Image (tube, rainbow, N blue to C red; front, side, top):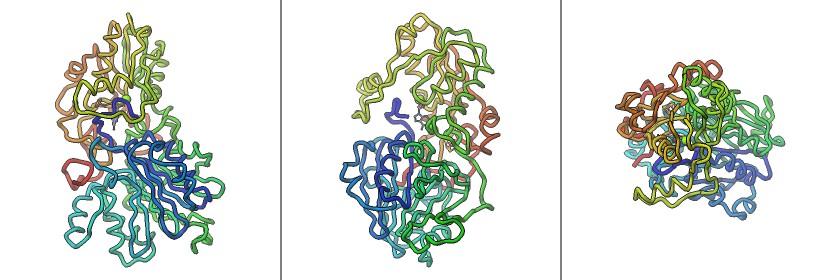
Length: 478
Ligand code: 5GP
Ligand code: SF4
Ligand code: MG
C-alpha cells in the first residue's frame, strides 16, 4: 500500500471495465482511482463506441496520467481501465495496460491482474512460429493465441484457448461487441460484477463499485468467463438475461485457491471478497494473534494503512489501548527513487513518522501484515526505539513468507526472503524486536477458509496449487 515502496516486490494490478454507459470513460477513470492501491506504476484506459478503440496510458498515478481531455473528450459506451504495480525500473510504458491489438477478429484491448505461469513457454512457441510481440507482459500471449483460432467471435476465440493458459488471471477484454471477463480456474485474484444505471461493470474490488455508485451483483466464480455485449451490438437481445450473456464455466478445472494475501494485505479494507469484508477479516486475524499471545505492553499500534484493522482487533481482544504510533504522509505520490541507501532512507522518513509522545517510555506492540525481506519491520522497530520505546514487540498477521509467489506477486528470488533460511528466533534477531510472533497457516484457514473456501498459501508452505511451468524468476518476460 505504498509504504516503503522502493524495490517492493509487488506486481499487483487492478482492472475496471464498464459496458453500456454513455459516460464509460469517466466512470472508468473514477473506478481506477478506487483501485489505485493495487498499482501505482502505470495506468491506462481504453474506450470504444463499438468500432475503433481509443487508448490513453502512461506511467504514474491515475491523477498524473490522464488529462481532462483524455477522460471527457473520448466518447464511448464501453471502457476498460488498468492500474499496474511493478518493480521500479522494469517494464516501461510499453508494458502498461490495456494492451491494444488489431486482430483479424477485430480491434481489442486486454487488461489483466495476475501472472501466467506458462507464459514464457507459450511465447517461445509462438515466436518460433512467427508471432512478433510488442511488450514483455505475460498477458500478450492471449491475443496471439486467440488470433490463431478459427473463431471469428472473440468470446469463442478466448474460451477455445483458455485451457492453454495456466496460472493466475483476472482478465478483461474490450472487443467491438462488448467485454469478455474471465477468472482463472483457481480464482487467485478477485473479480466482481456490478451494475450501474443498467450498465454492467467488472472490476477487481467492490470498493470500486462503491466509488462509482454501482450495485454489487456477484463475485465471478473460479474458471468462469462471461461476455457482456454493448447495447448496440447484435447480441444484446439475448433472451436469457437482457445483457449479460454468461457464461462459460470451466467447472471441471476449477480448484478454488484465492490468494490469501488479498485479505492480509492487498485489498482495500472497504472491499468484500466472496462476501467477506476485508477490514473484518483483518480484525479477526488480529484477534487470533492476541488469543495466542500473552504480552505485557502499554499500547498496541498498527503500521498504516494495511495493518490498522488487525491492530485494532488485537487491542480489543487483549484489552490493551490502541494508539496511533505512526503517521503516514498520504500526499507523497511518486517520490523520485535513487539507488543510494542514504537517499532511500530520506524517502522512507518522509512517508512514515513515529508519534514520539505516544511511543516514548512505553512498551509497544506493533502489528504488521507481513514480513517479506524484513526491511519494513526492522525499520519501524528502529524508529520506535529512537522515539524512546522501552520495548518493541512485533506481531504479524501471516506466517513467515518463505517461498516466492508465481501468481502475480513478484517476490523475486528466494534469497531475498528473510524467512527462507531463518528460524523465527533468527528473524526476531534480524529485525531487532524484543519478541516476534506470526500466525500459522491453519489460523488463516480457520478464519478465512471457512467462508471463502480453499486459499492459496503457497508462499508460506511451498505447495503451489498450479504447477509452476516456467520455474525461472517470476514476473515479466525479458
Ligand atoms: P518487507 O519490508 O518485509 O520486505 O515487506 C513487508 C512490508 O511491505 C509489509 O509492511 C507490507 O505491508 C508491505 N508490502 C508492500 N508490498 C507488499 C507485497 O507485495 N506483499 C507483501 N506481503 N507485503 C507488501
Ligand atoms: Fe498469494 Fe502467496 Fe499464493 Fe502468491 S503464493 S497467490 S502471494 S498466497
Ligand atoms: Mg505495510
